[in-house]
Amino acid sequence: MKILIVGAGRLGEQAAHLLAATGHDVTVIDRDQRRLDRLGSAYRLVRGDACEPPVLEAAGALRTHLLLAATGEDEDNLVISLLAKRQFGVRRILARVNDEDNAWLFTARWGVDVALPAAAPLVSLIEEAAGVTDTVGLVRLAAAGVELIETRIGDSSAAAGKQLAELLVPAGTVVATVVHNGQPMVPGADYRFHPGDTVLVVTSTATDSDIHKVFQ
Image (cartoon, rainbow, N blue to C red):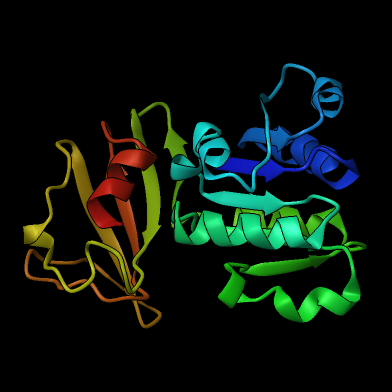
């Protein structure tokens, strides 16, 4: 998963280390080159002011799954969150609240999905990051050369309301199970996907990204 962290201070630095350690692709933006240099070469580092759209775009905001606005200024975190959500369509945004008196502003109206108090434990950030993806590889069966991939259908998913026969599923890929209203079933060609469905796909050729493109 691609994660964009704005702010290479204490929270941003620790978050970058922990998220990268869990296998995520992390990019960090900061205006201070010295802070970026402290992070080393394990991340993509972008120097600039993330309140400016060109900086966010250069950092890959259009391809970002989750953004953490972790600067020391609440005003900046709100502007960054709003830009990321409205202009770049980032699906999940976490924003640090430095001053408790400003907490009421950190809502969906400003593009914030999760407000993180300054003292919030980093484990909560990791849990949020782990739950952001709607498509994830579950099991790689090396001997058989196949992979089990799970994807969840949302209200805005491309597959919502469509029949299985209408979807261009990659060659070597089978939709094995759909969990609808808590009940697993083997879908026929005429099965119509609903928001809330969990789909289990078995494939020998497709990647997580391929399955995401079909269903999301």
